[in-house]
Image 1 (cartoon, rainbow, N blue to C red):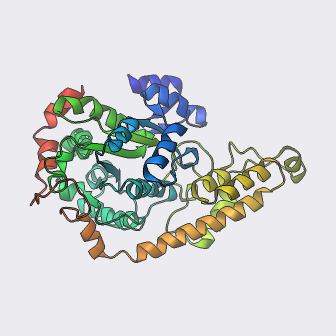
Image 2 (cartoon, one colour):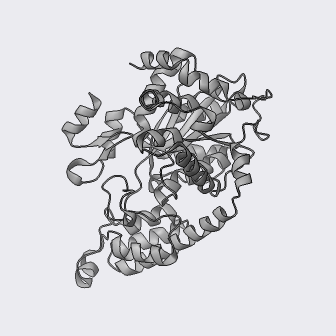
Image 3 (cartoon, rainbow, N blue to C red):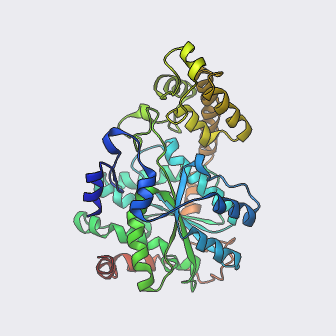
Length: 399
């Protein structure tokens, strides 16, 4: 019914398909109303700053705009109760683009600010089933993507990265597709990680994710109280815009729609200059007179994500919007910022060894997690049991 209603409205947002109305922009206000989540307002941002003494990086420019029960997590944190973070990646390509990188940069901020454990799920089983990849290729891509994730700077003493094939076990095609929602839901529950959270079934989970993942976790939140857990909380982002404009997700089939972490300085310069949609006017004369349309200008939006100097960003917005700065000048600054970012990531990734990947993915207690979790798990029993033995019960409850 939900998908039918979205189709009637001309906008479809699901984990498998994102389509804006009549080829336009995604209407996020409509999504908030449709999904029933809450807007992430300035009071919550200010509260995080007060609780952590760290400047939040998820105000509007970062694209995180909605949440579910984030305030409950903060209430519990103020009472001295810890929580853990859960996010993930579907490893279907060799390298990440900037749209993939942003949620991990944000998750690292949350881990650093709150000093909490983090679990990262690599859904190699899902990509094997839906992308027709071999098991071996899916597993290889998972490890390659893990290197990019580790390069973001996560704390190995607070981070557990796992692939579904290794930690959960694979499934046949048809039953695997049916059972995947519970497999993605299971990390929301602390009992899925007995080596981390033994006896901590009341531990809350906060999930940073894109808004298209909301349907998975609405189902999870419906079921959680009926099986004895807190509802997982979510903090949700909009879609990182393609270079050609805000029409939804970037397309993996069009390499010119995104900046990849493997792009050279020459690639970045070419992509920004040729493909980044400009809100500038069609002539210098008109631009000086009317200024740029910042609402549609992609270089400005990208600078909003990656330019760390707020004063400089505001200066560029003011000057460009008034027509005193030209499109070429804004693109030049964006090229500098992205080139530095990608080069820094490339150096960090080059330093990630196979042994480091093994360390992050080892099933082990985390020494910096003070949650009274002392029992070492010898095998990933709980998540496996949840995903298979309890599959029928979970699906029945979700109906």
